[in-house]
Image (cartoon, rainbow, N blue to C red; front, side, top):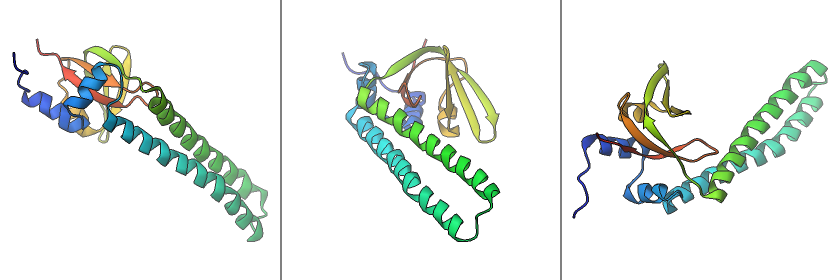
Length: 167
């Protein structure tokens, strides 16, 4: 018995989410494919570099402010929280990508998708109790109220692959 022929909708999903058969097979087994592991390692490293840069550049920026007449306490009251917010954002992204990479777990959600346009540039897919913020390209690859299995990384909530459950 041969492999079933992929429909146009299934190819559209694969192109939009950027996965292949090998990725899907690994995700069905509950793990990242080798290609996906490389992507997660690269993302984790990028966010880690961002954390490092904020940690290095922030003190230099504060010293610059203090030495350039920025002794006004209001300047530091504004700059310090901004630097902390940026650091926390980078730190959380770094740890999320790192968790998904180290754990190598893939979760799935199965059911009918609900598509929602939040704005011209913000799109959402709801399935079961999961909510995914997606690009327009990914959004358009799904059919509203059709049944799917969506495979995703639990910490980053990144969609890795999906199957359209034809009825």
